[in-house]
Amino acid sequence: MDGFKKRLRDSLQIRLSFWLSLAILAVAVIAGIFAFISAFNEAHELQDDVLRQVAMLFDRHGLTVPHAGNPGTKADSDPEARVFVQPLSAAPPRNPDNNSSPTLALPQGLRDGLQTVRANNGTYRILVRTLGSGERLAVAQETAVRDEIARDSALRTLMPFLVLVPILLLVMAYLIRKIFKPIAVLSLEIDQRTEQELHPIAPEPFPAEIRPFVGAINRLLRRVEQSMTAQRRFVADAAHELRSPLTALSLQAERLADADMSANAHERLNTLRQGIERGRILLDQMLALARAQASEGTSRTTVSMQQVFRRVLEDLMPLAEAKGIDIGVVSDSDTHVAVNEVDLIALVKNLVDNAVRYTPKGGRVDLFFLTTEEGTTLVVEDNGPGIPEAERERVFDPFYRVLGSDEIGSGLGLSIVQAISARVGAKVSFGPARDQSGSGLRVMVTFPLRAG
Image (cartoon, rainbow, N blue to C red; front, side):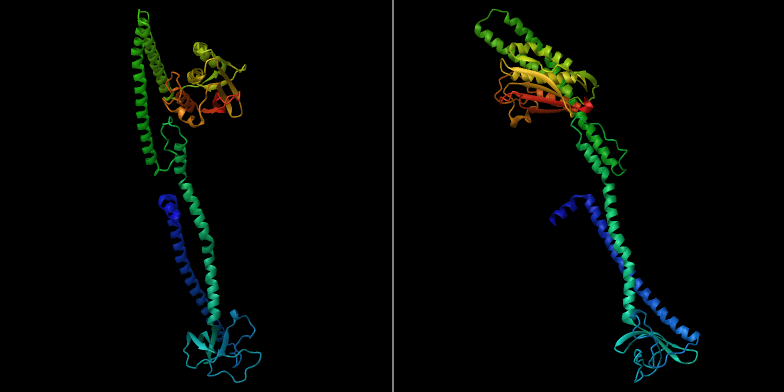
């Protein structure tokens, strides 16, 4: 009961259905009572008309009034059709006919008209009429039989209520659910959006009562988009402005390396140059992340996967050769995906850069793709330390790095991959390497068929 009260309090649809159902049931009960009483009284009036018609037949057509001891009906006749017709006498006969029903002992002082009288240990509805011959005639019917007939007739009038009210409740519940469906559709549309999809909701499909709510959501989305755009612009501008000082510092450090200095000074200078290089990489990654998170749509073209692999390997081959890493493309065939070429190059480059940096010297990095019913899957596999299961969700957070890693990095590579994948509709997942050695990592980016 407490759960129902909570749902009744929290849900407008359940509240409306509940109170409308109560209102319909209350109106149906009241209407049913009035219909029952009206039908009951109407049945009694029809039965009174039957008594009047019987008496009128005897008066107009001069029919013979049944003699004393003959009530005008057979004893074994249908009780519902039984009508007593007899002259108004002081007492019933002493020796009634065995084939006849006993007459009613009615008092002589009954007035003309309809009245209810107790006789023969029962209650009767009696019409007393004075015929043209001066004889008084009594036409009677048992009230128990009359009430039963009237009650059955009144109950039959309630049958439409008993059938139609449940149907009305079901129709009402269906209509309320259908009327509230636009709200569920609106909720589903908003829930299925990603954090980059901040375009306004079209108010035309929704009823006029919901459109102000849709307008408020659109204004909120516009404010959020403006805030996120300003934040990304600030990050991009700050990163861009810092590139010039870092470039100048890098040039000064190179010039300083040519000067005569002690071994200790050279060691400290190398540390300084590494810090400058790390800052430069961080700024480049921040600019790449800002571009990847940009809400503006980018044009899609059909891009060759092998061509992207070659361009990425050209850029990262010096880094791989410096570590003695065997890097190459395993797939001989080619496939095409319908994405923006710059996005795909940035995605593959960040994956391969991560694999090369975190794979130990003399390791191996393979690039290939798989074509399945779900779409085209880009795979970058290495035999490095991998990523623990507990940290595979957090590695997509900006600036997060796996503990125990001494490699120079910004912690933004997988954030960029995730942002680009979300924008193009791809899915990023991790798995073990093919060599089954317990180490290594396979990063898979699946482009759905609509993007392939």
